Length: 234
Image (spheres, rainbow, N blue to C red):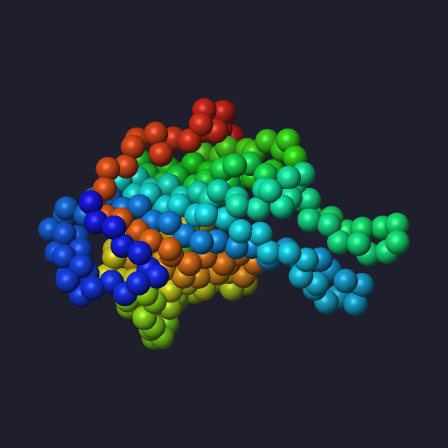
């Protein structure tokens, strides 16, 4: 098992060892951890947006062969135990934004053999129950635009890519490492030809940055079937 932490520079020897393992077909598993955050806004009467809070998560990505799963665990529950961010707009009035307070959120599972994706739609509010969805997907379904820009992030040489959604809006801007060929990322990102190291979702106001990763580690099978997947799928 190899362990890498992004807060320090990865040695050239470790990178070379990893690339040799990948090219020889031995790097069949990967576990990546992310620091994630989401900005919460309210719309004011003049049309401007007021930032109310930033909530944080620990993000996780696991690969075993053709199977991938990503999810996040909220780290803000102690600050918002009732699932509301509130802002006092007047002496007797307030503006509230509901949050999902499930301990596991944003779950997306993909199998590149069966070409099925299972994901959970989070329902905000205390006591909210998420909805499981099962459907087929096509490889290369997300069409990314690859930029010429590159930068070093924690010793990893990364390239910039962006994704425009079906509504013509720029959604994801990410930096990925082509030397780590992983066809998955946080928040269900797929079809990027490398491990996503840093990025943002401009639609949901979320940001994520890789904290550490491991290759060739043993990943328990139950990781790919969280308990909520025992509930019916739509």
